[in-house]
Amino acid sequence: MITLAVVAAISALAGLVSFRASQDAEVAAALAKQDALAWLRTDFQLSDEQFKAIKQLHESYSAVCAEHCEAIQDATRERNALRAKQADAATLAAADRRVTELTQTCETAIARHVRQCAALMSPEAGERYLALVLPRIARFDHQAPPDVAVGHRHH
Image 1 (tube, helix red, strand yellow):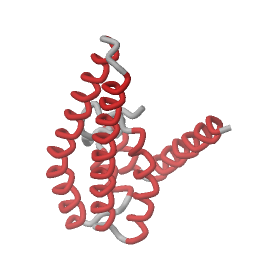
Image 2 (cartoon, one colour):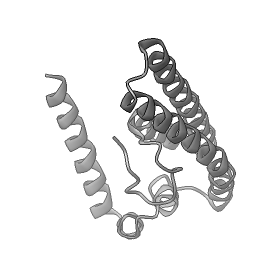
Image 3 (cartoon, helix red, strand yellow):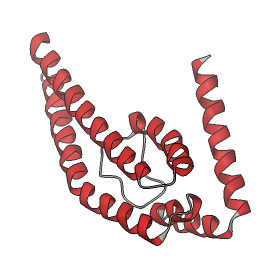
């Protein structure tokens, strides 16, 4: 039942994005280029001032995000090496906790960043942006910092 709900939600989101893209040539162009910032600017009707401020937030946050991703990847490799060596249960549990803690730190920081971006938009655009982006954070793969590519990897 949960799987069906997830599939339905993803289908609805894909349909909404396709519909919006077909209605607005600028949005369609941004999606075709896989340029998330261009999509953000056009779909959320950002002013030049809003766009500049959000772009600066994204650029400054990318280094923080890269550090988080690297730490998660390192901890995951260490945990996987311990599993391969069949380490004791307490050591494995500590390694699992470390990956979980780092993931939570990253996801909390991303959510804070997304909220900062939304606060720079009109109230309506900010609400729509949060509704679209916040649910995706838990599916982020932590393999690399989010970039301006729309098709960034998720679980």
